[in-house]
Amino acid sequence: MKKSYSEILLLGENTCLNKTIFEIVASQNDLNITHVKDIKQLKASSIQSDLIVADLVTIRGELNNIFQSIKREFPLSPVLAIHYHSEFEIIQRIKHAGADAYLNSEMNEDELLSSLRDLIH
Image (cartoon, rainbow, N blue to C red; front, side, top):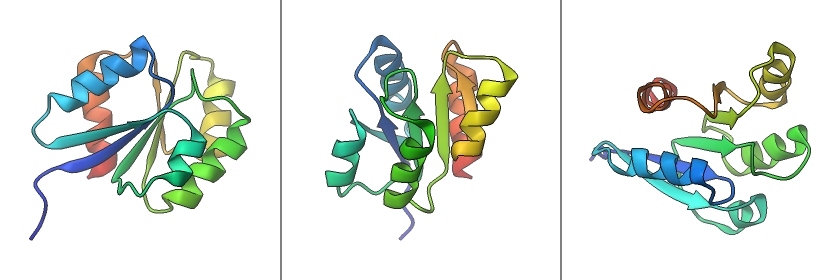
């Protein structure tokens, strides 16, 4: 039986940004969201996920190490990176490190939901 919702894992500290993302996603009938604060918690979890949302504003560490850890735990799940930078070089570094997509942390609700659903399907 096919599940009627997609599992999203929000990775990053519990900041105002994450609460907003968590609340937006949690309000959707077709999306289920789980929050973990850091990479260590990610490794210790047994969470299944269709998509990883990485809040790079709050995750500590070097970009390549962050994405290697995510991909090691969730090799088939796409990763949406969120950060406050909008400079082309920084976005390219984030994508080169392993993000499948990027959103500026000042995105609106429609942009967030559209990006999530595009990556899942």
